[in-house]
Length: 158
Image 1: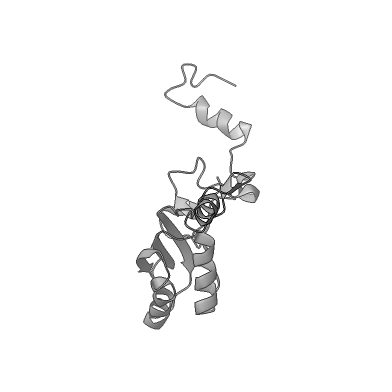
Image 2: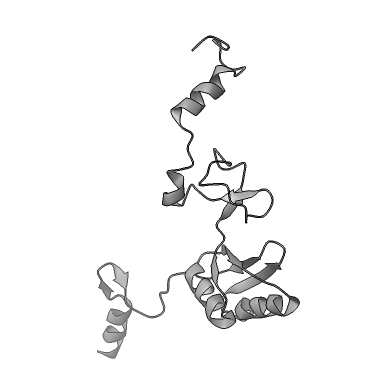
């Protein structure tokens, strides 16, 4: 009976999920980018130290010019963000910027941000409030394609 009880524990499935502790979900290698303000070298040290000892972290990079913390490892992004907020006591958020050439209209009111580092704009593709403002209107598209080299009817009176 002892042998059969051990086998039944290993093969016990409830709702398609194995209930034994040996079967854990394996975390994926991820890069987590966080925007956090760092004024001095002490702030940089504190931010780096806040996630350095975290389980699953393989590499931590701090970029004070862009106010950016990059954590690479087998971690949960939400847990990293909460740990940085808790340990440093600073306001932190996920990195909201992408390179300007990824966004279709980088200088639209929703995408352009004066506080963004050089060469970056706000990620309007993931932000639902800003994505409504970023696409070009039909009138703008009409005038930009009217003088395009790809348009066979270029310079025709509209």
